[in-house]
Image (cartoon, rainbow, N blue to C red):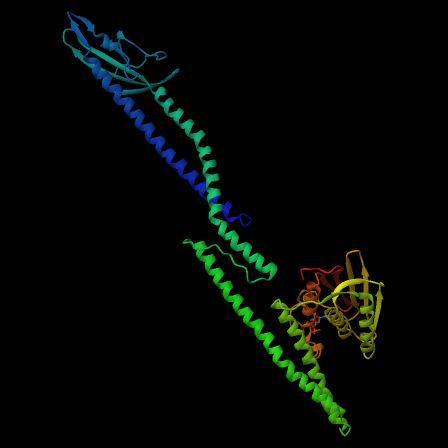
Length: 455
Ligand code: ADP
């Protein structure tokens, strides 16, 4: 039942109850009308026998019976018998065997080979003749047959009624539940596009579903507002922090230029400078992401030789990696041209390579590969470092997520890969990661070659 839709469940439920109710009412109705019909047949029989008495007279020992006696009223046959049981006059139905003994005022039910009969005898005394019996006979089978025909008709109509109710009910439920489908689709679209500006928009209505939809829209309105405020806050804070951090950096540089500094003072100022630099980088990542969230981050795309650009970045990173005893290798197909934003492309690559260096061990390597097809550029940054656990792998793209914060210093904020993902997606490409703990990781990205005008 869990796999069934609400529509199907409701349809089955009321069709079942409807059928049950109809069957029970029909059964009650038939048994009552069956009894009613039989009772009325019996009373008709008695009445006709009594009426039959008025049609008989006797004159000088012989019977004079009115012709009305032979008329068949309400399917009742009348016949006359002498006191000792000899047939005198009247009609008997075809197939009736007439074997019952005469018994005054008692209704007998007999089952013959051709059906079931009600037999009613009445003893009467006729002046000028003496005692005689009037017998009334009527068929029970005929009465029961008419009930049976009605029952058969009901059995044909009932399934049709059930099917009709089912179809009608299904259509009605579907119409009633349509707004629920709209709500589900809206939620799915919000999840897929991460777009809180969507609304169910069912309009005004008095039923519970309309009220639910209106409440839902109001909640979305509030959520959108509060998310908007949060994005604005992040953007404002980053802006405000940018100036003091730049001042700290320039002041550090100015102090470090002074020759009279003692070695200890130089180390201390150097440390402050390093931290300020990390902060500046984090602020720049945050600014980019908050602008991207607000849809304000623009790309300045131009057609570039990515092979050359990538080679240059690799060489730069090689110098930094050497200090840690790590090699950065490159295998890049020449003359790969694509439309990209140069500074964002460099930021993306630097992030991936510097991660490969940071999460590595002395003697390790980072390998950058790049090839092209007719329509896209395929690149990868691979290392043989510490790797990422399967639990952490899906989460590395989240903001501020660091798989093992204790292993890294403050220069790692956990924002790098979120930014990388945004850059790749904003170029109309895609990126994914593969990793195995202790063996290394590989980040594979694909970028379209042509400039996508929509971005
Ligand atoms: P961070 O500033 O911490 O490097 P990132 O967003 O760049 O932030 O990466 C998120 C987390 O993913 C890192 O903290 C690290 O645990 C993991 N990670 C990223 N790249 C690699 C890699 N090449 N090897 C192992 N772990 C990595």
